[in-house]
Image 1 (cartoon, one colour):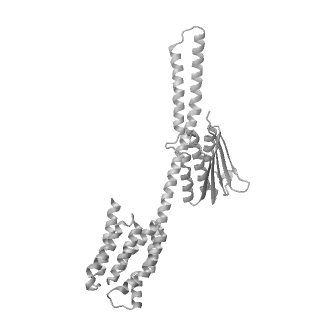
Image 2 (cartoon, rainbow, N blue to C red):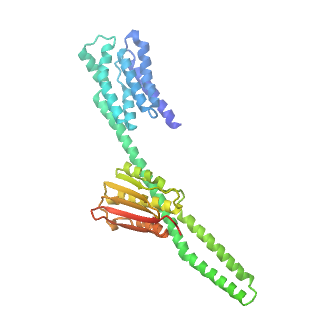
Image 3 (tube, rainbow, N blue to C red):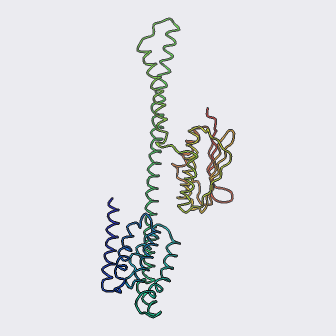
Length: 362
């Protein structure tokens, strides 16, 4: 809502300044039309965020109109529109519209009721729209677009880093729980079951406390296993269907990334599907941050008994150049599924991550 009111305020301010600038300059017979075109030129800017190309066309046409009506007022609104279209990333449209405007302005001045020579018309056209103004407006729009793009990329990177660190912390907690609790509970459960078995074998009464210990240890084992699974799982699910988005984001970041897929398997185990995504994600992240690579290829092969993932790059990273936490996390995921992971430099240069995940889980 605040941005909308700001847009209206800017549009109204530009419209008012154009109308004020036109006071005392018009040819009397065309005065109402000229003032209307001046006001419309400024007010059109209210839509410059949502429809920048339409605003560029509208401000250009209204500027030509009030010049033809005899108002030699600078085309301020058109410069705002050039800035907006360049900021929106419409480079070709901005350049083409600017060239057409520069060429058409002298013709509009010649059509005005004022008695001007061709040289004077071209001079006035140059005065109301100087090339330097156009270049400055376009440069400002492009500079802000690049700054916003870098800010968005930085924010996305921070979010991905936070999510990855949270995942790593969950895995760390899961390992700690496994090491510190699972073994002890298993020992208690085993001893209680043996004691119950021996008591029954001898025909002795089994103490209720011993039965309660056995049952409680069984329940604790189940709950601990469920807790570990929850800690190991990500809060949001990503699988092979999301890999094209990873490749697209890598391209957006400047890496020439390509994806090839062989075969198709619609009933992959969820753990395999999720692990495959994380392998590709971690590999492309390492390529972008550490490998100094220009290209990367992601190859996914659906085989009858396994899912094979291969990520190659042409960078200069060595095994020590890959973050230990990232590689360790990939190995843990793959090993937990009974698969195999190799990460090493390629013979012809670059680096390769090769993983094989069994699709039939034990």
